[in-house]
Amino acid sequence: MVAAAEQEIRTLRLDHRALRAERARVAWWRRLVRARLDLLVARTVGPQPLGEELAFALPLEVGLEVPRPADLDAVLGQRVPGSDVARLEELRDLDRRLAAYQEGVEDAFVRATDALIDHLAGDPEPLFGTAPEHDHTL
Image 1 (cartoon, rainbow, N blue to C red):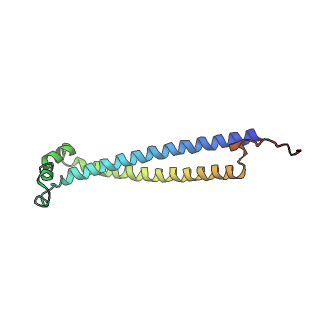
Image 2: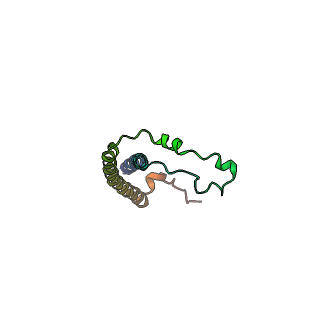
Image 3: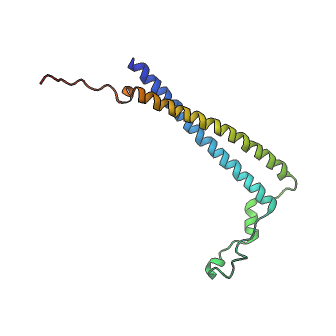
């Protein structure tokens, strides 16, 4: 009987571990897609200059370090007129699909966590093993 309970706990733990890893992967992909979205929007709008409104409010050594608009623009990469709009819609759709998948993975992770906790709360013996019998005949 204990062997079956131990096997069920192992299975629940494996499911939980796999779902935790999938949560991390989908979160990483969503961050990546959002970063690409941010880059496309920034490429379309162009970099906003830094330090122009604060030039006299900052110490000189800080003001000398402000990157120029051309330096910031170079980070965004080359602009290809018209291509960013289509790519923007593709990335938004991908982010929407990733969000739906992430929600499903999160729900499955919560269910797996609850199942593991419920199982261990109902039968903690496989977790701790059997307690040794004490000799009460002193």
